[in-house]
Amino acid sequence: MKKTVLVILAAIAVMGISELKAQTKIIAHRGAFKNTLVPENSIASLKASKDLNLWGSEYDVHLTKDDILVVNHDDDFYGIDIATSTYQELLAKKHPNGENIPTLEAYIKTGLKLKKLKLILELKTNKLGLARTLEAAEKTVALVKQLKAEKVTEYIAFSYDACKKIHELAPKAKIAYLNGDIAPDQIKKDGLTGIDYHLDVFVKNPTWLKEAQDLKLTTNVWTVNKETDMKSFIDQKIDYITTNEPELLKTLLKK
Ligand code: MG
Image (cartoon, rainbow, N blue to C red; front, side, top):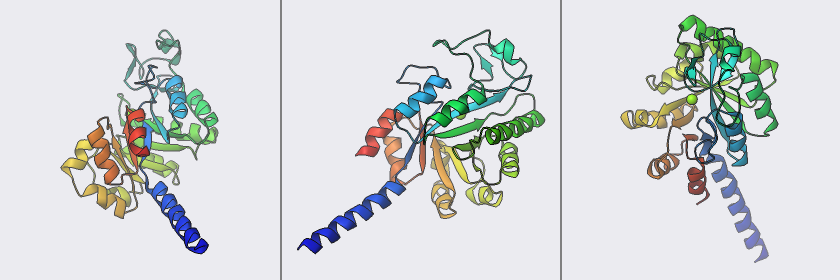
């Protein structure tokens, strides 16, 4: 009798662990900003991701005119164009919570203190052209290395050339492509490690998620904010969901 109980308990434990491994993980899009009422891509939004105990926090990286990597979504920071301005010029504006535009260095240093939080670094395409985007890729990889943040950093980018450049510079790094126009087998051939596509791309290409899973690529979908969409991707065992509503996704994954 006792033995039977132990066997059942062991089976439950094993099932629990394997299920845990397969469970979809949450990435806060631009940090956990929406319901926490802090600015997106601010240091506060990064800390809020940790407070929610999320798996990862996504953020966007641009290069200034004077070669400083900064964290912001749009090409401009409250009206000041990033690619053609110096870092000093960007300090003329602040986030509503009083923060300056974060440097990538400050962002990663904060992230490293938030143990176990993955830093999902989106390298933005530079408006001045491909050469400048590739320069930004080089500087970004060098800084991640310098700060010893390789283990907690995963890269994403819309520029396929930038993805390939990062792979060349950091062959062990996890790199997922964002633009949704390249099939999983090509991603695999080019040495990238995952796809991170808009939810419409998975609808338009219904075989791609399974193909990517079979190729052992990581699978990530953005930006999923509705409960029905979240449930659909959880059912398809996608690895990551990138969302503005991490709190909602958390409640669904607990069920
Ligand atoms: Mg982004």
